Structures are given as C-alpha cells and as structure tokens.
Picture 1 (cartoon, rainbow, N blue to C red):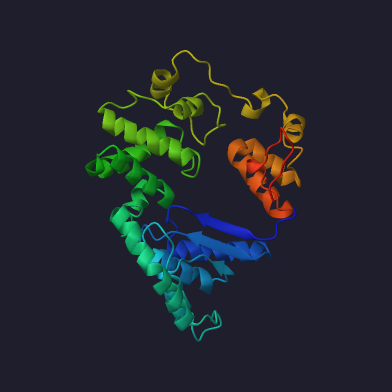
Picture 2 (picture 1 turned 90 degrees about the vertical axis):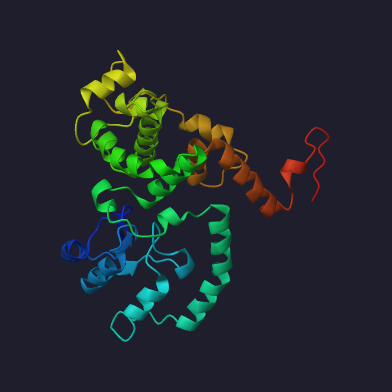
Amino acid sequence: MGADSICIKDMSGLLVPYEAERLVKALKEGSSLPIQLHTHYTSGVASMTYLKAAEAGVDVIDTAISPFALGTSQPATEVMVETFKGTDRDTGLDQKLLAEIAEYFRPYREECLESGLMSTKILGVNIKTLLYQVPGGMLSNLVSQLKEAKQDDKLQEVLEEVPRVRKDFGEPPLVTPSSQIVGTQAVLNVLMGERYKMVTKESKDLLSGKYGQTIKPFNAEVQKKAIGDTVPITHRPADDIEPELDKLRKEIEQYSQQDEDVLSYALFPQVATEFFKYRQAQQTGVDMSKADTTNKTYPA
C-alpha cells in the first residue's frame, strides 16, 4: 500500500519482552518492511523488551541519551549500545563520543529538575503502569496539572481514576487526543470530590460521538450526566463539516509551497502562519513582520 516501514508505538511502556518477541517475529513473517520499535521505560521493562525484539529481528529501536532516559522516556542509548557490542547487532557507536553528548546535556537536566520542568515523580519506575496503562506523556501532563492545582499528593488517586474514566468513555486508546481527554477528566473527578461534577468540553464531545466510535459502548449514566438530552451522533463526525480545502488554500495562497502547508494551516492556523512568515523571511531575506505594507517598504 506504499508504506516504507512499520513502527510499533508502545506509548505506555506496556509491551513486555516475550510479547515483543512474538509480535516482531509475526510481523517479520508477514512483511519484508523494516520494523521499528518505540517504547517507554515507565514500567521498567523497556530495555529487556528491546533485547528480545532485537533477537526477533527488529530493525530499529528508539533510545534517549542517558541524562534524559528512563522513567517516562526511553531506555538509555549508551546501555543499548553496550548490550549489542560484539554481536551481529553491534551499532558501531563510540561510547566515548556518547559520553561527551551525555556530559553536554547533564547540566541542563539539573536545570530542568530545579525548575520543575522535569519531575522526579516521572523519572523512576512505576510497575503500576501495567495496571493503569498511562502513557509517559500523559503521566507528565497529570503531574503538571496536579502541581498547578497544588494537589501533587493526589497523583495516586488520579492514576486509579484513569482506568475508570477510560471504561466510562468506551475504552478509547490512551494516545493523543483521547489520552488528554481521559486524563484531564480523571483529574477533575478527583479534585472536585465528585465524579463528573465538572465535565470538559472535550469529554462532552467524545461522549457525543464527535471523536468517532469507541471500542466499547459509553457508560450510559455518565453519558446522560455529561451531555443531558443531546442526541449522540453515530455517523462519521467529519460528514458534518463543510468542505473547506479550497477556502484554506486561498487563505494561505501567498505562503503555500506544498500540500502539507495547507494541512498544517488547517490544523494549527496561528502557529502555521507564523512559521510560514519565518520561512519566507529566511528564503527571501525580507522579514514581513517588520515590513510596512502600507508604504511598501521592506527592510532586509
């Protein structure tokens, strides 16, 4: 169908070693495409998962340099390089050069810890990840939300609430955007002291069918409490949107250089427009943000 590779995306760190071995073997038997594996260290098994996947023939594994590895990140690059040294999977990477990279980033790690940008709560191993199935990015957001609300001590309650909310919502996959919808609602349920006392717009949209059909049915009582008498849609949500591709093309005609630009603008209009202006300034040497379009003067 035109794919160049297959990527196994294990955003929650739930893929255990022998399951990874079985999965990679099955994919290898069914396809000649390169297979890449991406997992997180949240549950503590990621390095072993990579080892078994490599033995099964996986072509690529995603790692992180040691100062920013482990926890909700990936296994450390240096560890995996050493693991495969002298085998048919030897990467050929130089540990001395990797050490230089690690040393370069180590001070920034300390800055991130001191500023709170990185939290020690997400750097360790939480085996309960296998129970709650919370992805690394989602866990980071939960910690951030609770810290902002000065309710850091409620993290365990929120983690226990996540699978309950997910079940109420028809068990959507915990990947963006549904992971953020479920996570934010779980935080509100705990902080409000009453489940679904406050419901986000996104939660209402999900329970109204605007994010598509979920694997299992919604909890009818929760759905009623959240959206009241609103009639959920059962058709394709995008069918309710007026065709707008031609309109979008016209709006960014002066900046558009490829089809992807139209898609970027459709998804992120403000961010995309700023990027297009920056790109144009780099290409032409004219910064349009400083231009006087009325008098037609363009500083280089």
